[in-house]
Image (tube, rainbow, N blue to C red; front, side, top):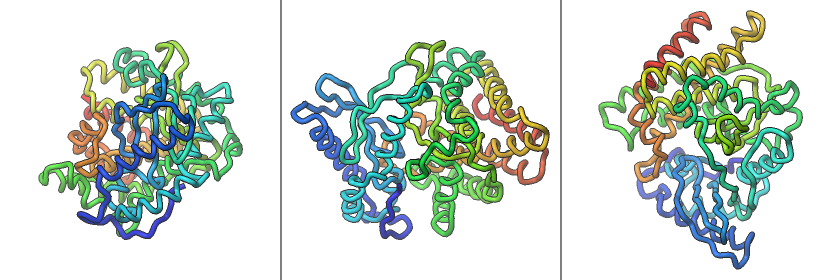
Length: 404
């Protein structure tokens, strides 16, 4: 769950938590948690893993290398550092209570990983331990889906199919009934995140101030306009599909890892299981693959082959139904793709200047204008009643332009 604390919209200046305060507390929390799980075992924090959602550190615990993750009040670090949960003393008091809750974000994630580990599929990283709001997981090594798409662009559709083969048990009709609603991670919902970010007065202020600490003034005006127009349109297009299946919840090319090479089964990191429609996982992987490519900008031929593979993969899942159902599913896919892209980009753009971003995020801040122009154009096509197949073809064409 995301805990509620009394707070006004984002606080200003010195009332906001400082990055140093948050990071020092999180590092100490990791040491305390490790000492409770493995008493007497030496613990050394190695590389910090930049993230906008949680505090993540590679840690050496005895002879083992693990990843330690802690969440503040179930909200993103960007929201926390912008003052959404109040000043640091308020956050600290609420966090002490939050880490004891069995329904916190990371206890739910640990429970999901353990359930998934007991199934034949999907293959996931192993839980090493959880205590005091800190989740420790075993590392998974090997090339990522993003790496392999870049190295073998002609195999993109097959690589994506391998990833989705792991999700078959989750995507079966009726699978949603197997997840207790209390154990779901709604924080990973595309539509839910979109509505939380862009709702009411705080959402309007958020959009106007996008890029405030990350971009030049000349770019900020266009970014705000693109976000405002796109959000206004997408808000009217929320998918009405029933939540009949489970979505894995946080699929992205960097977090689908192939420990046994490109021909072996992949392992998936960071689950966020929730009840959802059938297009949510497809949309997330499509959105994040385009963002991955927009940051890496491979050769024109590689771009073309990967986009063709993305199209083949997505069309194979959206267009197997009769005419009307196929159009609705394609519209859902397009809408969710655009919403997810806006969610991710605005989070990076809104990150305080002192928060370390992953390399991908840093590059996407620089590439935000062309990516959001794509979102603006495709959302306009959807809003103006262009036939779904025409919108889809236009979206793929514009995506190719952005990543090239």
